[in-house]
Amino acid sequence: MKEIKQLQPYVRKNLFGIEGWNIAWYGVVIDVGIFLGLACFHYLCSCILCDF
Image: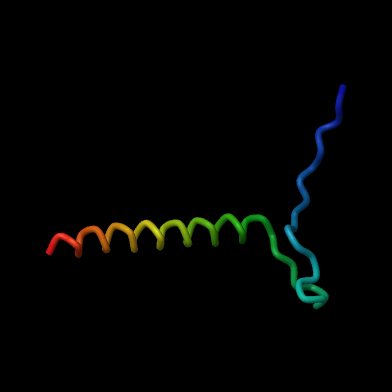
C-alpha cells in the first residue's frame, strides 16, 4: 500500500533569506479569500454604479 505524503506546514521557509520569516498555508488561504472577496465587491459595485 502506498504511503500518504504529508503536507508541509510552510509554503516558503526563510523568506528573502531571513531566518524565521516563514509563510504558512493558512496565511495563503486567508489572503486568497480576502482577494477574491474584494474582487467580487469591486465587480458588484461597478455593475450597480453602471446602472445610474
